[in-house]
Length: 459
Image 1 (cartoon, rainbow, N blue to C red):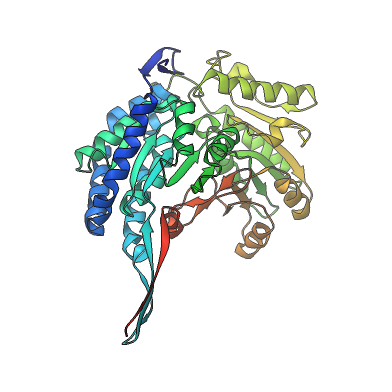
Image 2 (image 1 turned 90 degrees about the vertical axis):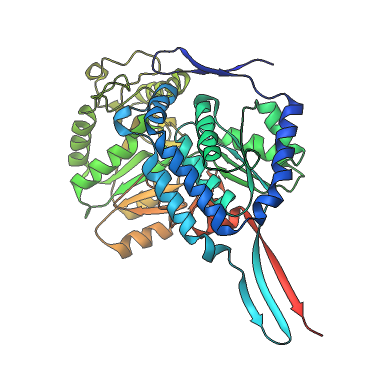
């Protein structure tokens, strides 16, 4: 068995190296989680909530080292801090609705019958987390899973493997037992074997479509429920009545933040013909104001992509599009830090269409294509011309118009005048090849529990 190496995008060095668990050790970890679950679920809900919130508080105390490690692991500039805003907001919201959401729903309580619906923990929850927002995506499932009475086994992405260690350190320091929350290092084969052996009662995976297919194949015939957040190609639509400056600022940030490595990042934009020229001009100025550089440089607003192979995918899509007639509007010379590897200059493309991969396949990098449209009908058709459906961003000044357009878009979340944001009160979900299931909101608790009916009769 070979060690798993974390290659830093900052300088190409080996930043961390860990040996994956052998099969016997992996099975033992899952067995410990299963053995610890009944006692954890038996603890009072208030106690579980307090321990989870204390774990997140301990994680906040590690902010300095967490921010530095994230920069080394996946390249995000330190000026943006960690992921604490979302981590804290999501934890607080899910903790706040737990009692009401998990409480039994009484149908009848009389002298003859007591009938009610309860929610019961599934058992052992397995989280396979991604590298792009490793703390946020883990918290989405970790917090409700533990609060609901499940034990959790976490497999962090190899690109951000230290994230799992920090989370375990924080939660254990807060008093959550070691077997209730475990961080493990696994290779793909062992991961799939554990799923196939019914080691877990729920699997949450965030990653590629190919990874989701592998998870589904591993779980085939086990009846293990899955939550899958996979690819995305999220569109923005700028209507004629949009606030132009606000649209440029938010959509360009949605396309470029985190080097474009956002699950719900903006990857394609459709602009009404009346605003198209002005939108493009302002967008080019916005992107040219970015500074690509070392993430530890306080002036860097754009860091390297997490791995040079990810950047190679984006470069390939851009080159193909240009060869097919697309026009690049950003001069790479304005971004001298572009080294042909992980450091990649941002790009805006026009003269694009849906025959080009850059407009139909996930890029997951700092590139966005912009197309002119004549009306809502054309925009809706183009937004739906995608195998994915995570979010769509509509720019208009009218709630009813946004809702009417949103009702016709095949997507999980409809945004009006915003993008690239998760509201913990709303379900985070997708459709088509983006996956299935949902996290956050009260439905996030439903994902990690099962309904249990009680029909009690007095004789």
